[in-house]
Amino acid sequence: MELSKVNDLEKENNDLSLSSVEFFDLVINNVIDKVKSFRDTCISNKIQPAVLNEPSDGYNNSCTPLIMAAQYNRAEIVELLIECGASIDTKNKLGINSNIFEK
Image (tube, rainbow, N blue to C red):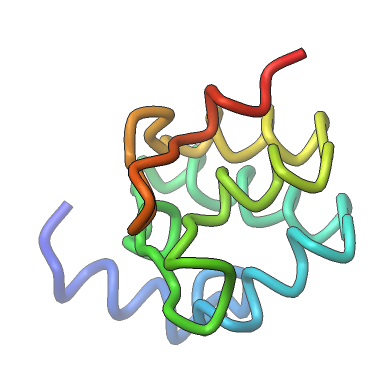
């Protein structure tokens, strides 16, 4: 999907217009209903927002939302993020990806 269409969707849909900090807060605080809504919006519009794989300097050595969800043992959030297209291979500044937290 072209960038202009993604930007239009973000304006129309609050689920896609979250800042990375807001998105990390949803993950860390285990706000499953909001992450489900985000996932549903991504799937129905066939998009993969950048926030899924963007490391955030404000959180734990530039972790991605998926790494944070795995670190905080948010199993359902991990599944939802992967369904949205989050990469399991993206690493933080320490070279850690979400796989290190598997049990």
